[in-house]
Length: 225
Image (cartoon, rainbow, N blue to C red; front, side, top):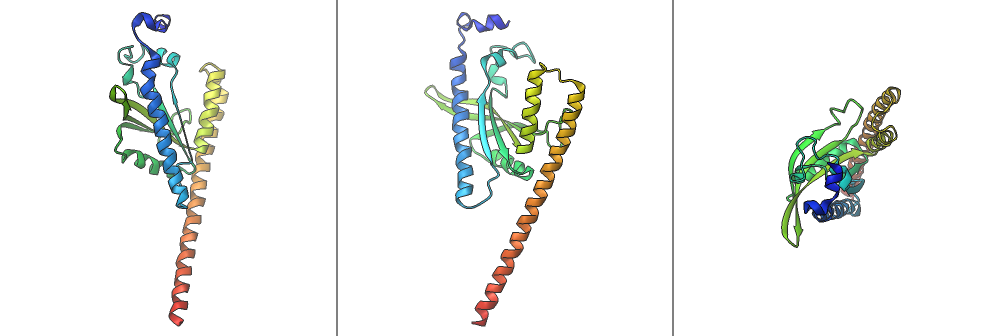
């Protein structure tokens, strides 16, 4: 099947042409999200978006899915993860803010969501996924493409990167001892995220209290004059 699909000319199918709207969707959405991040920072506000990256799956990765879960060369557009946008947040509280931001966008039609933060995978994987339709302007007209957004903290991303490399090294069969250590590491990153969010909230509360006291003191001084 793979060798057959790789001879695309014989099928009258071009992956290069197929990928064009997905490439465009990823590039334009990265620019949009980076623009939002810069707006927050220019206003001196905390940005829930720390960094943004994206990718379009390779043709070989897609070919490997053909024949699985009723995927055929004719319905490749039904796949959710051909185009992917990864949004990294500094704090776990920011993930809900980014998710709301995406839900409320007029150019994004959310299809479904998967919460691997409140319900982590058995492996320890934690992230928030949003599958959506996004309209892309092409020379042939408007084309809806599916984009998967992955929203996670730096700690979650570090863990996922390590797990991905181990899967590649062991060809998907990570030894049980290492899997157990990964689960322990995932619990440690969850504790780290929770503690960092708590510290951030305490700092924000202290800053608000300081600002309130400063304003009250200013009002008293103004009254005395």
